[in-house]
Structures are given as structure tokens and as C-alpha cells.
Amino acid sequence: MAGSQNPEVKLLGAWASPYVARARIALHLKEVQYEFLEEKFGAKSELLLKSNPVHKKIPVLIHDEKPVCESMIIVQYIDDVWVNSGPALMPTDLYERAMQKFWTIYIDDKFIPSLFGMMTSPTEEAKAEAKEQTMTSLQLLEEAFGKISKGKPFFGGDTIGYLDIALGSFLGWMKAFEEMNSPKLLDKTKTPLLCAWAENFCNNEAAAAVLPETAKLVEFATVTQTRFKYAPPAK
Image (tube, rainbow, N blue to C red; front, top):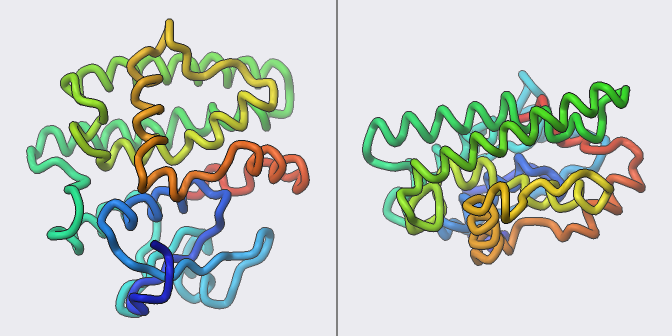
């Protein structure tokens, strides 16, 4: 769906970034045509520096020449602007909306740092602590899914929603970590609900069009030797 058919919508990003994947999945779900402007690894274009002078990080959505920064702010912006296209990404119920935002903040502040910490922490002790926190986080997200989904396939119900995008954008990297000798992250015996959810998410057309192949992510991490360039603190 990325292309130049709608010159009013551009997305600055990089293929390996899960934060960029959030914005791209939202655009695909809402059936928004856009131009994807790939940033070179290790460099920052003039357009990026101009569009996000505060953090100087991807992703940046440019709509009608106005930049929007931060991945989940972009997702909500897309949902609000293209309200009549594709499925709603945010629930209409205010309490449910608050819960989805709460768990999204938890993912960004607790789960993601520990997930990447399993691979990047400087000592084995720190890696072990990151692993324990990651597994604890997944158990909490398993419980949250049971409550929020209400028996439906996604956090958003019958369709992918805001919280699904927040967590699902990292599934490619989770699989890559498992290939790189990290522990099994989603286990059918320990996190059966999240296992089923992950399969449904990856099989969704919008997500499948965006999520990178596991082998490419492993190669990217190995070749660059600066693993997980697009991991926290960028959002």
C-alpha cells in the first residue's frame, strides 16, 4: 500500500524499526495510501531533522506537510483523521480506551526495555534480570489479554486495534531473538492466549505486509553489530 498515490501522506522510517511498523500497520489497516521514505541506517536526513527537531528520531508521519511524531501518537492520529476508513483502532468506551493506553505505556516502559535487555545488557547478571522481567511482563500481558479481549481474537476485539499494534509490531524481533538463542518467549503452555493472538496478528494482511522476515532481522542485527538500533528509547 505504500506508494506515491497520496502525496499528502508520507512516513519517514526504516524497515527494521518496530516503532515504524506501528505506524505502517495502522496506515494499512485504515487503507491510507502513503509514501514511505526510508531513512538510511546510521544517518538522519535533513527532512527528518526538520520534521522532528526535538528527538530527531523515526517514525515521523507527514500529513498535509505537518509532521506528527511518536509511534503511538501517530497511530491514534491515523485513527482520528481517517475515522471513516477501515476498522476503528481505539475503542469508543472511555474505560476500555484508558485500559488500552495503560497497557501500551506498560509495554513501552517495562516490556520492551527488558526484551531488548536480554540481548544488549553488559553483564550476564543484567541479562538474567532482563529475562526475568520479560517473562513476568508476558504473564501480565497474558492476563490482560484474557480480560480485554473478552474471548475475541485480538485486544481490539474482532479486529486489530491500538494495543494490538503496540505489542504486535515487536513480534518480528521476538522471533529474531528466539533464533539468536534467547529463551522461548511465547509458549503454548505458559501463554496460550498470546500464542494464539500472535498467530492471528501475523496472519492479518496489514501486519503481514509490514512485519520483517525473521531471517532479515537476524542478519541485520549480526551485520550492523549495533543490535537493535531502533529499540528504546525511541517511540
